[in-house]
Length: 381
Image (cartoon, rainbow, N blue to C red; front, side):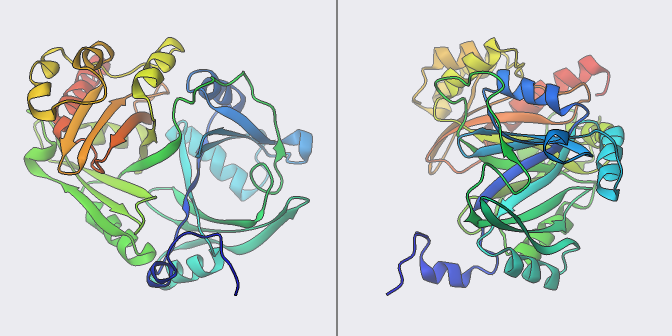
């Protein structure tokens, strides 16, 4: 009898029309990949593991692959645009600033995934094709999603190189910390234009077989001045989760409106990074220069009454400005960075889960008020 190392139940794999293994990589187009790689190495504690550029035959772009546990970032910059892809990347940075161009998903069968997606309405960007080097063969395909973002479908079961064919192993830029600041990508949040959230929710439902996980509307997700609506789609295993936000009509400009204005359209807003020790992560990252959103002391005055006891004492949460939330399944701890570039666009979240599979519903008002304070400082509220 043939044995398999895939621990997913066979019946579940058969039932899932678009099986996924998890997030493969978040790919950024940036103005200066060398400097960006240094920032994510020193400030986020990530480890460079692979590189592709002129030194190994890629004359158009330079790409740095950084990892922290299962979380992988690829930072790409254009050296000299000579192809349509190079011109797209250069134009993307010019119009959007540093931002995500690809939320790559690892799948067991890229050909089948691509065929299913296109048959159910996806726009194909790259048909399935093999890429090879001395480490084996990978199969890649790509489909379009909101804005100018894509999902590359990565099948790497027959590949054991440092990242993908064409990349070479690379030493860390700096010595990574003994304890990782985060271990995985928890979820990736997209901002879309007014009135288009349900359209993109339907896209993930139909094209990738994702199901609706959470929905936040109305007073759940509003302050005195601004509002937005959000729905979360996820694959059946909950390994890949995509919250989708759109602005809602309110007295003033919401954080989503600000993002859409400065990014120049729909795009990936923030990445939530899963950590096992949010206290150690926040201390290390703050010491390395990462700026986190502030939370007023008044938030903590009543926090213990509705969140109850958590792994981290209330005084420590207050000291580090970490948020907490509890639902029927458990609790979570979370904190958000300020934007990591000059444009008020892409930022990050650290999240430590203890049973809860939520997204911090109880913190939305406090979070959005913190973002509004930053918007006001920028003159964009």
